[in-house]
Amino acid sequence: MRVSSVSELNEIIERSRRIVFFGGAGVSTASGIPDFRSEDGLYAAEYRGVSPEEILSAMYFMMHTSEFYDYYRRYMIYPDAEPNAVHRYLYELEKRDRLRGIVTQNIDGLHRKAGNKRVYELHGSVLENYCVDCETEYPVEKILQSEGVPRCDKCGGIIKPWVVLYGEIPDKYTMIGAQREISGADTMIVAGTSLSVEPAASLINDFSGRNLVVINKSPTPADERATLLIREDVNEVFSRLACEQ
Image 1 (cartoon, rainbow, N blue to C red):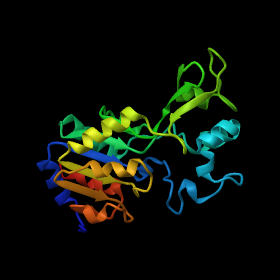
Image 2 (cartoon, helix red, strand yellow):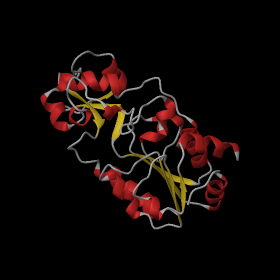
Image 3 (cartoon, one colour):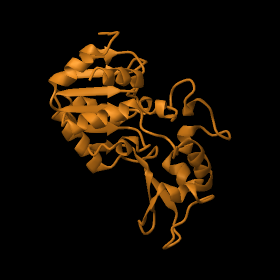
Image 4 (cartoon, one colour):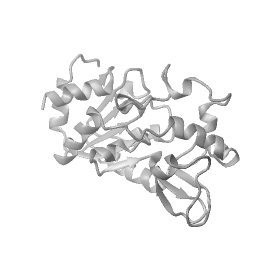
């Protein structure tokens, strides 16, 4: 079903008691962070003759760590990005105890920056980093303020972002927590994602609640299952949604 307003979405939210939000890159574009698979996204062009998918792989990190960090600092970290209308609305929804969890494919940390506590970051966060040898943890400033390959202050080991690279498996406990919240939700809002990245995309199969809302500018595999389908920019939808409160 297509709708031209968010009134029906607002009604669904007001009737719901256990909402789970599942978001992707489209959630953060209004904060100045590009998505991946659109025409202007990060994956639209190679970097020094290498595809972004290859650069952001575990193998490339191990074999070409310096080149990985050249790309990573330039395109994956946005220290000045601020939460947008989506993040702010979800924070208010959590304070009302309607939102039971945010399951995000994003690594920018903006949901937590907005104040949300129940966040399941399936692909990790650029804000968290660790030494691969002694596991000492470092903030993102350590990456930004270093040159070349960042090294541990304690043991000299390589510091790695706490993000899930291609070829790596998402954290088991994060996945279990996300599955638990999704399976117990009465409403699931899927927004700003093409649902093309596994295993994250398959998590919607754990939802058996009453309302499945899909908000995305382009078609997704979940459209046919959706109770409510909105083909618009997610930030615009949530900006209007906030005005109806």
